[in-house]
View 1: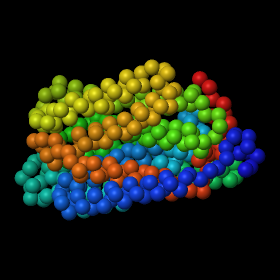
View 2 (view 1 turned 120 degrees about the horizontal axis):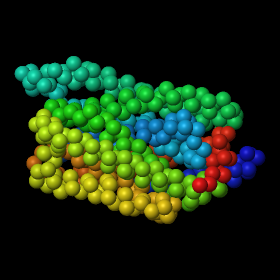
View 3 (view 1 turned 180 degrees about the vertical axis):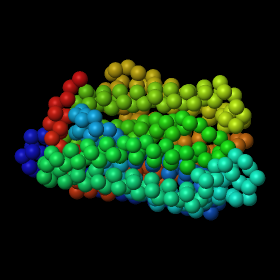
View 4 (view 1 turned 45 degrees about the horizontal axis):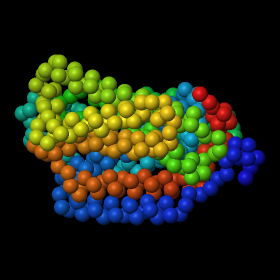
Length: 396
């Protein structure tokens, strides 16, 4: 153990081998069932795969946003556990692989990929310059490449700082983060339009990108909070993390829960008030049959429960409450994506069965195994960051 590690009370420990075995087992079970689902009903499986892709994009790219935000804001309180977020963000490397089954089923997912359908449809013809398979493919490749590039560069500098302690690496990451922020805004917006909004190509919403952004950051925060608290409770992080640090995580979860609700209601209110048929049909189809139950449930699942669960100050500092709410919020984000995506597959009635369970299981396995592999032989805190000591001393 180095003198620096002694000063901050951190001793590097490898995660237990059993965690990797658990992750591998869950991934194996999920993968087998998912493969079977493509043989049983490849269209339904593709829609579920799309939900998984957008969920993992939220956790990975949302985590990258949180890292960049810390560097730009010069935040201190989050420095002791920024490395945990960096590890979770490594999921972005896997996104192209997750996207392959979706891309192979574009014609089953997206109405606008059928040329015979586009011809004679004025609305789709006017959008064909943007909504075409060639340009769609280019955008997807560029988005993935940019996310992976910024992840690798930011992580490289962060890991190098563990060894050298060079403060200039922090300045490099600040500059990278400043460049990444507008890139993030554009790519996360257009990826949500491409993968989700274009499922109903006649519908449009100028606020949809912000809607997906709000859920993305909330999901990344929840995944990070859950991992941070569990690692800290098991003694894998440094000594000195107290409830004041937890409070900041809880406050952000509460803030973005409210932000998501505000954007969701704003989108609904503007479309309801304008009362234009080309906009309202998107909500109306979610208010028919069993989709009405799912729509009402979204209000409770994604807003009311986490709102009251994190409302009081003690709840934002209670590790048990934060773990529970983090798991709930991750479930709520998947629920939200299901509500956004699946009505295109089944407009009359909501569908739920073993396929809808298989993909979340696979997702859990991917996240656990990826975390174990990426964190192997790495410090779980940024021991070379000049802000680390101040971060550990942070008090409200």
